[in-house]
Image (tube, rainbow, N blue to C red; front, side, top):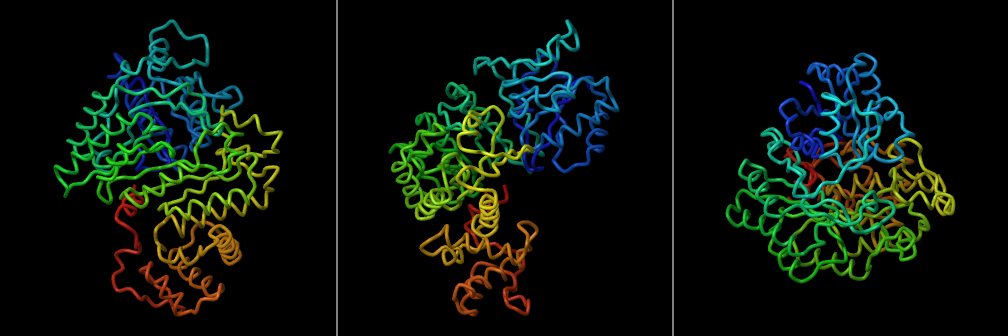
Amino acid sequence: MTILLSTLNARYTHASLGLRYLLANMGPLAPETRIQEFVIGAKTADVVERLLLHSPQIVGFGVYIWNVEETTKVVAMLKRVAPEVIVVLGGPEVSFETNEQAIARLADYVVTGWGDVTFPKLCAEILDGPKPLMKIHAGVQPPMAEIALPYALYSDEDIAHRTLYVEASRGCPFKCEFCLSSLDKTAWPFPLDAFLAQLESLHARGARLFKFVDRTFNLNVKTSQRIMQFFLDKLAANPEDPVYAHFELVPDHLPEPLKQTIAQFPPGALQFEIGIQSFNPEVQALVSRKQNNEKAMENIRWLCEHSQAHLHVDLIAGLPGEDIASFARGFDRLVSLGAHEIQFGILKRLRGTPIIRHTEPYAMVYDPAPPYTVLATGLIDFPAMQRLVRFARYWDLVANSGRFANTVRELLGVRPFENFMAFSDWIYTKTDATHRIALEKLAKLVVEWLQVTGMERDRAAALVASDYAGSVDGAGKSKEKDKTSVVAAPARQVRHLAA
């Protein structure tokens, strides 16, 4: 094997779309190229050993914010035990501030930006000459119709056990400064007929779960409708063998024709990820985010009330110019709209993003290690930011998990952020932990907290028991005969969680 394409995925169920794009576009070098994927947490020596089993001349690594530290260790060991192997890096993490990174210093070459054309060309020059003189190669962006689509490279194993990532377009026309897509000039669509033909082929092979990575799926409504109609046709043809599709929506752009299409999907077939990030107009303007808040709220409310889609809505804490009170108001507004999940994220300083221009004026302090999370701002000090981090973690465990659907309403009351923050602070004092809290222990803690806030013990236990199938009584005796499931959540959410 001459060329090996590799990356460390966040989990096994993720299949790297980027590596498959590279392989699909290798041209004459395709027969000499293969993919070898790993999962973060693997032992460095084991990864290197498995890479070298293929006796590669070139190893190309996809480097991302979640795997850069472990990939750096892999590259360092690989260059030590097999210095003759040429290492080429690519991916968003090494496409910016490249010269500052240890992994880039270890590697032989780095491709920044789009690699579909540039990586195969670089490999050909390495193998056949003339040998490239420059270490860093800026990726060339070809016409979209000239990029070979990679979906035939999903294996039967991928289709059976992994999330299939697809994209009808690349790029984004918006300029939100915390996002790498802010560097794009626009969004570029792939030829739609060719893309739909690839989806048809995947479906024929048994694919049923499709996750679109487009940043602005509903930017072109006619295109969105055609893609959604593809899934509606599959659902109509065989309702007993449903498909499931995930899309990222622009929150304030939901015209009537698109609503009519969305309303046709049954439960368990559709998920939308909707980035609100902040409801504060001053903060939105500061980070160059254009958003009609009233329209966005109207659309989320409509989706909750008139569609069967599962809604995953994002907020970011720690943006420049936003204090906890402002974030809390935005959080409470989202809760009132009824979204199924609120993803409470903490700002990260992604390499290359314009958010860095606010560092000094707003006293932004970031963790120097990936994922470069904000530690403090001029309006939120470090202890307060730590409280927000814990809130986000407990929110995932209790609310987003779907395991306490009835109980969460009682926990939140009429002041959702304030009440859940009090619960978060309390549970941290009781456990001194945000991870590895067993579900049964968590359920008992929720019961205890409800009593702290004034609820009678029997009522609290019954409320949690209405959600949770394990033991919630003080003696630890199970109140549930059927131990096969501990999740009381809509089927669509259970399916999402499994993905």
